Image (cartoon, rainbow, N blue to C red; front, side, top):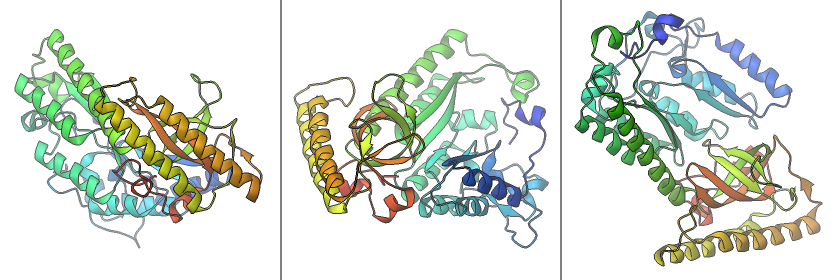
Amino acid sequence: QFCTYCVVPYTRGTERSRPWQTVVDEVRRLSSEGIKEVTLLGQNVNTYNDTSAEDRTSPYVVAEGFRARRLPTREAHGLRFAELLHEVAAVDPEMRVRFTSPHPKDFPDSVLQLIASTPNVCSALHMPAQSGSSSTLSRMKRGYTREAYLGLIHRVRDLVPGASISTDLISGFCGETEEEHADTLSLMEEAEYSHAFMFAYSNRDNTYAGRRLADDVPEEVKQRRLREVIDTYRRVVQDHNVREELWGLRLVLLEGESRRKDGAMTGRTDNNKRVVVDGKGGLLPRLPPVSLLHDVAEAAGTAGAAVAAAQADGIGNGETGGDATAVAAAVAERGLAALAAAGEGGGALVQAREGEYVAVLVTAVKGQSLRGVALARCGLAEFHALGLLAGAWGGGAGGGGR
């Protein structure tokens, strides 16, 4: 895209796309080795275009309101990113597929609809905004306005319920005014990012900005604005996760033992939120009958009401904003007791291990991280086939339990 602050096009050269079949073959090999998650990696990865796929070609389409630099590698008909995602996801329905680092212009509806309809394509979308000001975006040559970017954010929320959106933000870019900085803060309020990479602008030689624009924002102003951006992010992500994640049922891929909490494991949800998972000695039943999970959901609803009452009374514990510790313990005790009984009656409990999926009830929120109780082992396709979505379980109202 040749953004004015970016040195990447001058160090890595023009865009190139691997033949799609080589990508699929590599993913198939990884699946045969037991790998449960792959990430498609590339600079502007969603601009992918395999022009060697002569029998499966389609034109280049960008998201509404965005402009793209016209390059021969993009303009030529070829196999596009949505089709590549489809082919990779089809290799193994139990393998999660992520991708990074994309550009927001390359999220046409075809990509969003495929993510929404394919359970193992993760709904964690990185959409670097860089600024919330149209005038600053113009100086950056980003190819979109604030209005176009927010239109895309709302499109994601509509088409991919429960998606998390992450971003990159630069404070103190050349010529940035206090009003332009305020536009960035208000953009963050509206976009409700789940993760953010936030930096003060640092001039780079051999970039357009380095040669043509004045790095005229004083360093102390850059750092003050950056602190305000970070503070806004922390407040917004806490509020968002309390509303959207607390008391929801989530599928978590376990990654290993927690370094901070004895007896717990850590993992990530489909939308890339880190979860510290408590279990009863790590022993869990296989996925029990849906009717039994309704009992756990009922307990979660009771817990949610108790937390709301605690908030109304002004009680806080620094995590969920309410005194949820005792409530979470009650939910865990009731849920695990019921599920353990199901295990004793219908099959032995099994040890939860790294690299396995578990159904987790989210019981606490601390910023961008979650804490939850492991309820049962289950497969990715199995979880989705049973319709275990957040709205059905009295938890976060914002979307599915992916």
